[in-house]
Amino acid sequence: MTWPIGPDRLVLGRAPNCDVFVPDSLASRHHCEIVTTGDDVFLTDLGSSNATLVNGRPAKQCALRPGDEIAIGRSLFLVTTSDVPSVQGADDFGGATTVNLGEDQSQALGDVTAELVAKAYPNSVTELAVLFDVSRRCSRSASITDLISVIFDAIEAYFHPTTAWVGLHQSLSGELVFYSPQSIQSGDSTTAPNEVQRKAKKALARREGLNIPVISREGEAQRLATLLAAPIDLAGQQIGCAMLRLEAENRLPSDNDLRFLVALAQTSAPYFQSMRQMDRLRRDNQSLRAVARVSTGLIGESAAMNHLRALVEKAAMSELNALVTGETGTGKELVAHLLHEQSARSGGPLIVVNCAAIPPHLFESEFFGYEKGAFTGAAQRRIGLIEQANEGTLFLDEVGDLSMDNQAKLLRVLDSGRFFRVGGNRETRVDIRVIAATNKDVPMQVKRGEFREDLYHRLNGIAIPVPPLRERPADIAALAEHFFTMSLGRAKRPVTGISGTAMEYLLSHSWPGNVRQLRNTIERAIALTRSDLIQIHDVQSPAESSTEPDTDKTPLSLAEVEKRHIEKALKFCNNRVNDAARLLGIGRSTLYAKIAEYGLSAE
Image: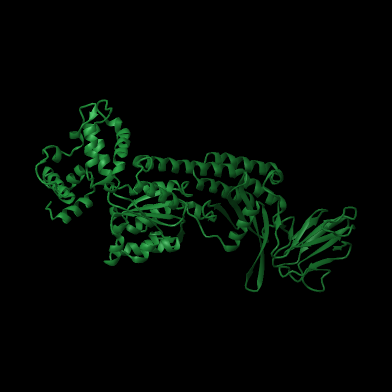
C-alpha cells in the first residue's frame, strides 16, 4: 500500500483519524508527521512512546531522502520517488510502502555455506577493521573463554547491545551452554532466557542468521526489541551461536547488521574448532597415559576372560552406569578405563576418584567444587570432580567406602544431573556416565544398612564382575610374560625370560593379591635377579624362599597355606601390616580382612 507525500501534512499513527493508519500496539496514537517544504521532505516525531526510527536510528526531526526506511513499532515504511518501483508488491508511483512484520515472524539470511559466506562480507572499512582485530585476538587466545571474550568485545564495540550471549554446542548432549559478558569474567556459564535458547537452536539447526522481533510489556506499555542470532559453524560442524538484543528505541538493525554478525561468528569458527581439538588432544593424551599406566588391555584367553571382554564391549555401547566388582588387585580400574575408551564418551574426560581417600567432611568441596570465599582458605573458585567429568566418565573407585550421608548427595546428582558448588547459588548441570568399583559385597552392605539400596540400583545399571586370578589359572603364563615385557627396562642386567621352575611356581601359586600381586612379583624379580633368566627364588617372597618345603606331610588346604604364608610375611615384617601388604602384593585393607578371617594378630 502507498501514500503520496504532497504539500499537506501527513500524520502517521494508531489513531483512526491519522492520514496513515498504523494498526500496531507499539505505535503511538499520533506517532510522527511528514511535511514538504519546497523541494525538501522532513519527518518530525510527535512525542511517541517507542520512538521513530529512520534507517535504524531514533529521529526527532530529520530530512528524508528516497530509499530511507521509517520504522514505527513493527511496521516499516520505505520512501520512494515516482520513477522508482516500490517494493513488496506496492504500486509503481511516488510515495512510501509499508511492510508489516508479525510478532512471530523473523527475517533470515541464507545458508551458511558458500552463499551465506558470500553475503557475510564486511560492508565498510570499519567492519573490516573489526573483523581483522577479532581474527588477530582469536589467534592469540589460550582458551575457549578467551575466544568468547573476543566475540563479546567486538559485539559491544559495533552494536552496543542491551545484552549478548554466546552458546556453545555440546556434542554428546546436543544442548547449548550459554555465556554472557558478565558470566564469562569468571569463566562460568549462565542460564539464557527460554526465547534466546529456542532461537539459538533454530539458527544453529537451520544454519541461518536470524533477525527476530521481540515484544515485551512494562505495565500497559509495550516495547519492541530485536534478537540477532548468527550460527558459529565450520564446514557443517555445529560449534555454537552468537546472539545479541537491541532495543528498538536505540537501534533497529538492518540486514547488513545481521550479515556483519554472521561474518563475525564465521570469523571465530575456525578458532573455536581448533581450541576444541586442542582440548580433546590434551584429554586424549591424559587418558592414553592413564591407560598405559595400568596396561594395554585385558590379557588372557581363558573362558572367564573372554566372557569379561565380551561384557565390557557390550557395556561400552550403553550409556547406563556400570558397577565393577571384584577382589583387590583383579583389574577393576583397567576395566573402567576400557569401558570409557570404547564408549561414545572417549573424546571426553575420564576422572578417576578414590572414594576411600577422600575424608567424609571434604566430600562436597571435592566432588562439587566451591566458589571463591565459600570458606576460609577458598581463595579462588575450584571446579569439582563431577564438573571436571562433564561430557565424559566419572570413575568412583572404592565406592563402598562412601558414608551414608555422602551417598545421598551423590544420588541426587545422579538422578538430576544438577548440583550447587559449595558457597554457590547457581545450579550447575552436568552430563556424565558413572562407573563405580568396589571389592565389597554391596548387596550385603545394603542388607546391613551400610549402603543405600537406591544408590546401589542407580550404579548397578550394568554389573561387571571381574574374576580373581585363581579362577583363571590358564591366564597366569600370559600375564607373567606381559608384565615381564613391560618391566624389562628396570633390569640391572639383560634378562631374557622366565625359567621353567619359576613359571611352574607362578602357575601353582594361589595369588591372593590377584593380578596386582603377580605384576609386583615379576617387577621385583626383574629388578633383583642376578641371572639371565628369572629363577624360582626370584619370584618367591622372602618368607617362602627362606624355608624349604616339607614334602613328607599331608598336603595342606589352600586356606591353611594362605594363612601360614600371611603369618610368615607378618613375622618377616615385624608385624607391620603396611610392609607385609607390599611384600605380598596386596592392598592393606585386603590384608586386614585376611588377618581377621584367620584370627591372626598384627600391629
